[in-house]
Length: 449
Ligand SMILES: *Cc1c(COP(=O)(O)O)cnc(C)c1O
Image: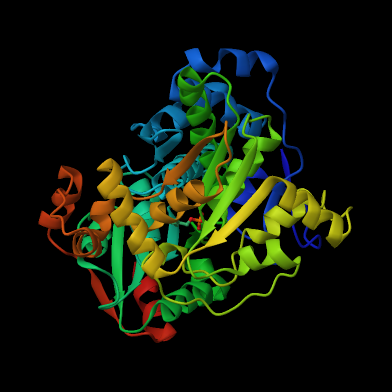
């Protein structure tokens, strides 16, 4: 498969380049040249297939030309060592629980898949180079304000030939989040930067542009816009539809995705292009409402993000908006008006304040005994408000509520259990390298590795 850039000014890339580079030369996002429709037979048989079997079929459509069948199957099966079940919350409303992976959020799926695909390409390259210079380790640099670092670190943990450096702002990450990437050891190094998240991001970007550093070591990013992190998220949408069709007898399905950078919903929209039988989508926003405003007005106006209870959705200029526009403008063949119409025909939106999020969490807990996390609460509420008679709604529970235990307990008056795998992180020994926010220090540190 070839990949083009949403900005239209970069050379076409193959999969391995798109994965290793992440972003195209013109700073656009990579898009697959073709999104294959899956055959009718697949949809007819889906409900008798397992999650892993379904995921492999979807993976084959995206990656099958570039990765041998056995290797791809192994990558998919090894990625999905946990379930993404569909759980009934109330009549006609279901939660797609995406928090059963190692770090209890949906980002585990993409991060684990990307780690394994990257390893596949490294091994292959080393084979091609006939080992003249031996294996050269690949170094993944990732800046995090919390959730991304834990998913990427755990996704790559123990993957041979890859070392991960997680940069995070000192004192700005919750204890639970910090423990998920500072206690791992092995091929994961946590770097505690005396600065804010933007400093971490700047250090990573400077490193990618530094020639001396790039001669010294192979550097790559595991950014969430990477096609290997973003496309695999389609797996669980197909599985969700398969599981729900066993219960609902062909009622139209509405898929509702709490959205920040819009990667998760974008992968669902790619699934829709492949034939996923979902009748429409809802993008649920917190107070960061640029996409909601686009739906209302047809104008996209990025803003500075505001801090909310659902902080993983605090994004003022979602990167993947470019992919949505590219998809529905048919790679800029349609006018902005026609594109807006195509988008609004399929996707609706909503925006909720922190007070509305709190109110929703309390109401759902009182009515159903179901504990929502602040992100999932936006999704649940959107279905409550927008579901039409005859439809079945599925919303993504994007993280386990225990990841936000303090807030959740305060809002609901509960003392929710922390799952054992989260407690295990919290018992671990913190290991991190303290660094200033100066690039010179970071560079010296990397040169010594
Ligand atoms: C990352 C994240 C989101 C937002 O997902 P996008 O793909 O950026 O839209 C929502 N909820 C949680 C818990 C997250 O970690």
